[in-house]
Amino acid sequence: MLMLLSFLIATTPFAQDVPELKNIRLHKGENQLDVQLEITPPFNYESFTLFNPNRLVIDLIRVSQFSATPDITVNEFGVLKIRTARNQPDVVRVVFDLEETVPAYSLEQGADGLTVSFRPEGMPARKPQGKPAVQEPVVEKPAVQEKVTPATPTPREEPRTTPMGERGSRMGISVQGGPYMVTSSDFQEIYGKSAISFGGGLSFLFPLGDQEDIGIALDGSYVSKTGQTTVTQEDVKIRFLPFSLSVFYQRDFGAVIPYAGLGLDYFSYNETLPVEWDVPDVTGSLIGYSFLVGTHIKIMPALMAKLYIRYHVAKKTEEEIEVNLSGTELGIGLIYYFEF
Image (cartoon, rainbow, N blue to C red; front, side, top):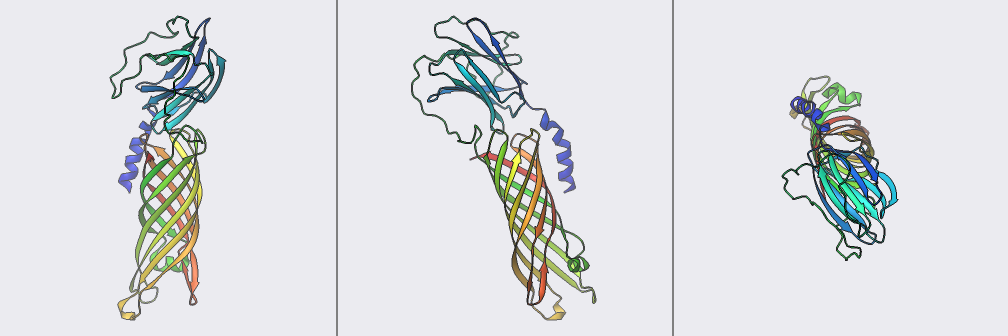
């Protein structure tokens, strides 16, 4: 666990040194509109058009965050609005909402970003304002140099999008561990104040907006601890497996993504008593609930560190014996997200 923490501390500062869409600037001329996307290199891009309604979509590949204004109203040169959002963990999508008559446009990659030029059909193109263009970097997929859309659009199949925003749904796989501190004084007298838990989980994220998600997570852990009876000092051992089905809300602030939620818990437990007692092990299960707060810290666009605190309420009385596994779980781990 200390090695994992050292790795996270060593790698987290590099999470912020990633390509970023910093600003979107508009330059309006007499017969042409230039839209400059100021982007921290290196990056690549792909562009395509969608119809009904008409849109020009530019995916900035390997750009994982943006600080540009997410919504810009234009209403000139056939461009109604410019919208920006993260489409995937390492893709920022810029959408130009267009009028019914699609304007001619061209794209040019330069030293400090990408320039999109719009002009009425039939108008001659002029060189966009800004710094001189430089040669494009070699990338896996060739970037589109120039594309002029005809005035009469032709139907095409649209790629999959979600009604809640430009981002898609994601699934995460995690591994985690940390101390589990049971609050019961009876437990502490025999086993001490804490035990170590190890586990993992699955989580599913559904976008609520450009930077907000609602999530569902299923987490499971294994906890084992050996102790001694208070009077005879004989060895006893307890094992329990807490499973939590949680609903949580999170907001993306760039490198840090805090979240909070509620969970329904199921505990399976087994306590092994001394052989000399000649009594069977104590086994059983119980239902509880939990409160969860935590944060993700980006290491790479899809790989994140996971830090959390979960408080479990889990106790019952059976045959005049109280079973109390309520406690605070502190966790640290890694989670990897991908689109589904």
